[in-house]
Image (cartoon, rainbow, N blue to C red):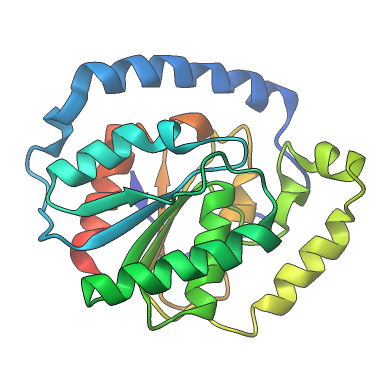
Length: 239
């Protein structure tokens, strides 16, 4: 992994190419390795003290896809929980209100703000929750999540167009949202090997406090990879 001191000049031009998409097959090996490693990856990592952590899956993924990450965080001492919305259907206008209420209730019960970890589209949602509820969000960690463009620079762009969405309009709306800053600690995890989201689209050039960490793994491996988990554990300890 590599913590960036300065951001590269690369800008997103379109979704990942066919070769990058096919290379996502390496995630199967990452899944097998993650199962073999189990909780051994916790060795030497800073521990939590019951802080609340909510996990948000990517588009088309569900809570089961985040289960290993949940188990690792709980074993590390965090009160980690799934987002409670089942499979991510991508309908942001429905997810944001439901998650805002869940965040309100949990933060009140815990007596402290909640840490949010979002994978892919889930990371985009965490960013929006942090904008709207700065007093309820302790920190945000995104894994392969677009900070610009929405679906425009992802392999889901054709699907969104087929459904009748204007991806250029979505990109413009996201840019307008930047006037409301993200104030909490923000860790941006991205990989140049990402075959789902164009990696330059993951870079947050607007949030001064954003800490960018480059890893080397497939998009679908990011919630499983031991190196990514180290980044997560260290980011939570710093927040």
